[in-house]
Length: 398
Image (spheres, rainbow, N blue to C red):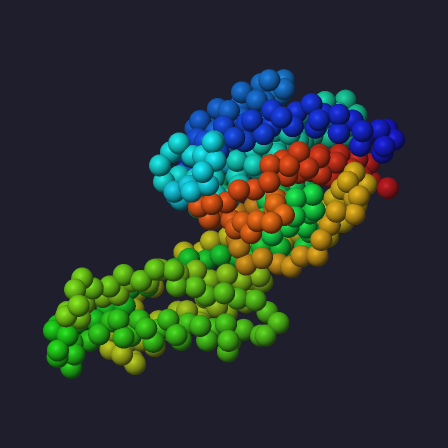
């Protein structure tokens, strides 16, 4: 492929030429966010930018996804790199001049940054393609926020012929210029559930003539927390969260039912199975304890996102050669990612890209979130270098 220093310099040359344009694209996408499976305009911007770079693409994959292949000058493996495109149903409160123009919709998770970053990777690898071994497949994915886009794209052949994959996410808890890598499980499995506790309604003054579903639901909520404290080992990880409760209409009527919505997050398949069984057991016990049947609708989500050791180690070493000692210590996150479905199919690694600005305490999924835009060029640089070295190494095994 040529001397490693030459590769590094070539990457930097492309990044310097493209950075202003990538930031402009990010700001355009930020001003026009689109919800999951509605990313029509976003996909159009991606397709236009790829055309500008001389890269053919296929649109409408998995609904609104975009796929593009960059062929290297030498034969080798196919490496997929995924960037997600969808926004969140949040009203933006940043005050930025390029703030969302779509009421109630915001890029509060930085997927506008992710899309621009993958376009930066495309620019770099297109320029270096003659020296590249194998093929890079760019996956611009819809609907990560509802954990549906990866599955939809895979069903339409996004991973056909793919040997390994890279994913990434911006992290405001990591300073811009730094990166993170976690061995093994980096993001959690996430399963959702809906519970309806059924009682018998009546007057609040005469609870003895009713069957109170709210009291039963309150006990259930408390009981579910013992899954974490008493059924999962102290060194294992599990989070059970009730995110919504709906019951009743006025202060003096005991209602017929109480609805609960929640999630269970785990880092291993064994704990995931144990937690699911426990939720069902607690629900079954309500009828005996409180005379309240409980309907449970369990919605299996995505598995844990697992980093393959050889993909992680090769990528981290490549990024260090490009950018220096830029990695900070990290630990698994209980957030979920549908990149896990890609990582379950082929060996993969998810890079954490620092997007935090000194002096700010931004958080993802917050109406005031403002990632540092320098993370776009840095992320593209890191991912492109990792991709080039992965393909060189595994296309020509030593």
